[in-house]
Length: 484
Image 1 (tube, rainbow, N blue to C red):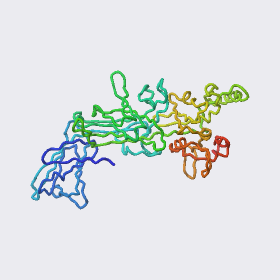
Image 2: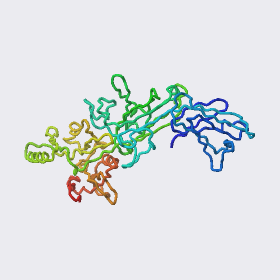
Image 3: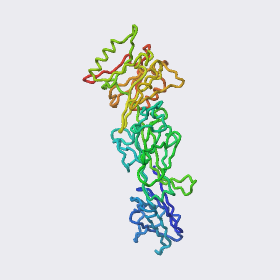
Image 4: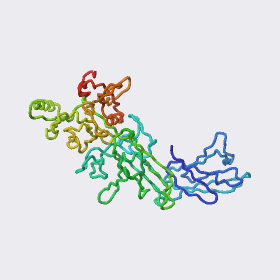
């Protein structure tokens, strides 16, 4: 609910205040009512609109004055940004029973624009003056900005994913981030007593990082201003138009984190240098971190990874030659993983699973690395993570894993409708024991991660009747003309 901005009027001295473009200012007229007053009227300069809120039974008097009814509220709005300080005036006159003017209260208002904006409509553009910016809804007709976890590696020489870097080392990294624009407009003199502060809730701060794009004569500078170790940022030189911020996600949805993060811009009245400031207006926007989406094997392949076994009775050279021929016909890239790279671990399907993340401005693949951690344990991180190819993993506490933590035990269906409910991205399939039985189970850390993504609601299928227990040992999906 928006914060109510109340200004106390006085008949002993003029009152000065600041309002934000298009917002309501409630005038507290009761404390300034002189003794013997029975009615009042309100006049204002042309840019000010006066609203008298009253009950249906309360009517204005014949001379357009209003009775001093305790249920009456006076509200003013201004829809034009001030060109100079105190250029909007409101006058409240109080009258006695005989109609004589007893006293006058003056209010001088400066109107400024404060607007925090994101890609609210998910069309790749940031527009100002959106409605319900603090609301996020799913679906093609929904609203709310989308944020990507910056889990690829665009930065040369980075030891891990870009989200692990507290700075921007290449402008290519900006393409993985979402835009947020803070617009401030108004007389510069007013911002000596008022501050514009960008802030993030403490509960969200470790999930995001924000960079301020600062213009300079030589090259643009991207200053980290919000994130795990910083909850607020005071905007310098407020009132001079647009300030651009780049927002990156640091964490996927998971237990205790729905994926929603919010940012707010507040206008604070700061009467003294060391004052904490009093908020008189706050504008809030909400992002949702894009989920990791698993891709079904019925989609057109782009790249196939195969482990090579050159020597001994387990050699797969004949198999590799057949794969090469098929992929040439399919015009699909083939990546053969050598025994040196795999450390003789042939089960690449058990080690990794491919998916992607998507926002209106950017889509890139993300490899999900299993915690099985055998010979292939470093392959995804060292050989797949790179520019526009992300990486994510889930390590169970204590690193206690079973066979069911291998990703041969993780699959996804094509798009499906179940009991009238559509799953346009399919449903994730996990091999498990029977619900009432004890036994091996995929670790809670992985299952929590998969369930938290929401868009591919997992289904657990009985697979422990198998020695290895993987769902891919008895189930797969293949394209069919009738889709059945």
